[in-house]
Length: 213
Image (cartoon, rainbow, N blue to C red; front, side):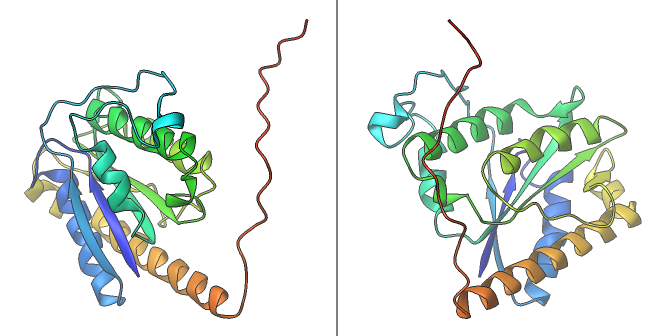
């Protein structure tokens, strides 16, 4: 079993990475593989809402790593997305990236890349804006049939630099608790599948917009 740890920060080894690294260490102790995916500092175009992905089977914007990420994601059993807090919300890079990745997967009929796989979000901040950013990121799971994994408190760490994050003992402890809960859920899911427990029955999706003639 493998968990993809997504670093949405432009800082490769910054505060968000420090939290994800703690999660990675704990997952390893639990016998779960993980890999940190770095979003980096490359320019990202936001979703155009064009719907071309439904015909192309991928995002029409091909000059960044979103389509490559979708292909990578299909081989993972769980996801933890991490972001720094910028102006009281998740950073612009991760928002543009995940909007397109989740939408393209859904519109191209490949929602099983994410659906019914456990997901969690973590955020890092110097001071505030963390709960708003978490609420924003958790919506990707809520609309994609992804079980959300929690810790024992909000999944956040505080600090302006990595050394300060390491001093946030409660925050770092919660990263470990989150990792153990993720490992526990994955093991339960694997055990259920081995006993023949099937995924929920799919229904054809009905779209309504509440407009009446």
